[in-house]
Image 1 (cartoon, rainbow, N blue to C red):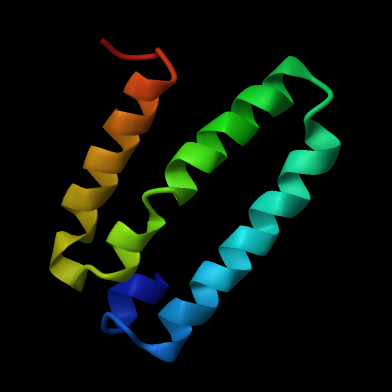
Image 2: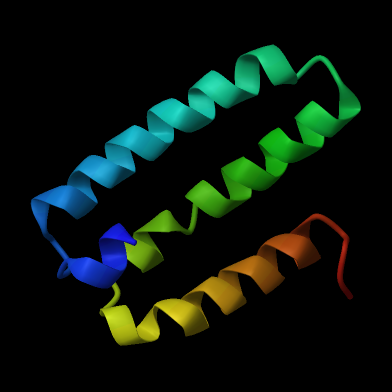
Length: 81
């Protein structure tokens, strides 16, 4: 939502990146004791590695970028050929 309504480089986008890093760290710790939690953590780390693509994109490119990142992450996790 933030990326759809702001331009690349906007303060809101920069704040979003910081927020997501903190959110992921909070999610990884307590949930890493289960297999599902570890798998979810791995997926989150893969996705955050591609987060700059969203933050630097114009709004009309977000759908295509999301689809590419989603497919690449699933392939990296062995869920798609």
